[in-house]
Length: 373
Ligand code: ATP
Image (tube, rainbow, N blue to C red):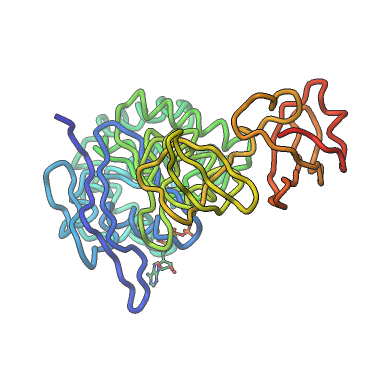
């Protein structure tokens, strides 16, 4: 039997007149990496915050394993959160910051960086809180646990450094270490790589994914970056205007988008509108004077949209003899390196973007040229 760490059942969240999340249901299997993906304002963060306990659902239920957790405080849940802003305490050392992860878990009612308290308010009374933490856990155990997570994020020598002495990437790792020190069942990550430059971001994507696999912790990860989602996730939940549009693996979402929105949001695509019909040989979609042969699809009928990925189109000799061979004119060249991007126009006036691996065929793809597609 499949075991789930997180389950949302018909969850909605209203802020006054604003519907931030609408009737969202999904499950995250134990040890899996699920990404909530969608454009700005689609409800990703609100969904994550309801799992963390920083927001209460207006409708529906949130479960952790088999327990309904709607009414539990964040510190009563076996979850931990990493924020885009990191929410580290600038005047404390790395080690103290990480140890404070244990504090956040352990003492009810204290407002911390992690539930949105400003850094200024967190600073008051911190040393007192830290002393209480040390007296409760014993400093040796804390040291051991801090050291263990520092090694995990590959910054073993950093315990005594001040936060202000760290680079952005190092701060990101410390924020991660602080969330991991409590050994949560589920780690919640809200655009954790958003503040990093592209190269570091790419490296960290791979590292985070490796770490997740190594630890076997369930990750729920928020991003608006579709490439990041495709790279890292076991499953992706695509959200739009508060609703869940599709839940599936990267391949399912890319190859079988459930809606026009998903097809358009995930990767580049040519969206073509036409009329679908089935016949003895299979099915077709007619777009003006052109008819495309397609595989029959259970849910298709009448006027539909279909997506043609730019990299699936073949041109010139590569196109001959394939299904759906048409003539077209090259009308634009967006760039031409070893990966070329062109716009072609079909006989019916439909324009398609085409991505090509260019070897020696690039030369004949000049603007105005008639080609087979
Ligand atoms: P982003 O990628 O920009 O962070 P998001 O997908 O995470 O966006 P949310 O932050 O969940 O989106 O917001 C969803 C909607 O709910 C937005 O319209 C937002 O303005 C609204 N919203 C979120 N929090 C509140 C709040 N506390 N009060 C009122 N409206 C809110």
